[in-house]
Length: 285
Image 1: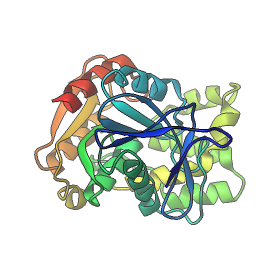
Image 2 (image 1 turned 45 degrees about the horizontal axis):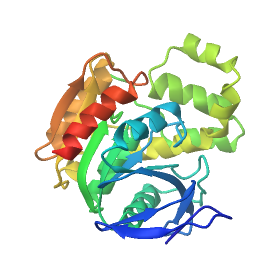
Image 3 (image 1 turned 30 degrees about the horizontal axis):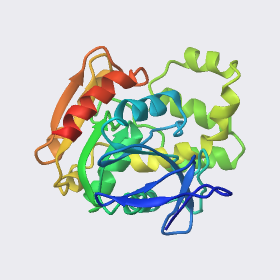
Image 4 (image 1 turned 180 degrees about the horizontal axis):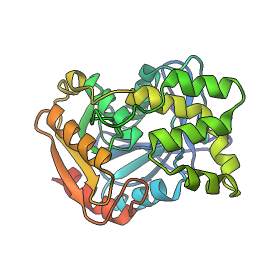
């Protein structure tokens, strides 16, 4: 079920099988469990949904930049995952609920859509495709699986959710950044002194969601083998060996998938224009 922003009057039209909603965002779609999911819709053309990674919202500069780079060719749906931004949340959390969120957005876009997921958002997009969501094409950027046995396991859902429940939100963020995102402890210490740290702590509860989506171990090859749509796996040439290895493992697991290297790009240091160009080429082909 779809509606325009609260207090706004929107005009809905049908163009080429895609529902287009005029008027300012955010718009809302209701997921299967009744949770409201907020999204912006820009551009014109085939529907393309963006799935963000940890800490991000649809208004994050990178996500907004990716949407801007794509909107000349596609109807871009850029949404807030549950628990952040203008979207709601419903306990208890389950990965299946996030898959249902994405399905609801696909329904709002006309019943089928292309999907791009970045980082842990890429892992979520892969899980949705493996579960049979009506995705026509899929692209992901460096889903952060631990595909190398010599790398320490990333924090678990249980560990991160326990820290948040104990009121130790800052510690949950530190654990996620140092063990999950490979950031040096001294860099995280410097971040804590910055004004944006409070905003990071505010979404600490969603870090457990990311851990649940990615899982503590290797690429779930047995599930990804069920994906039957054209799939592109993107990786930055400047990313860590862990991210490079995981990207190749995903491509090996998904039938027919291929890896495309983005020169000069890295996890957390991504130029939306460079990514947008690669996505345009793939989704337009």
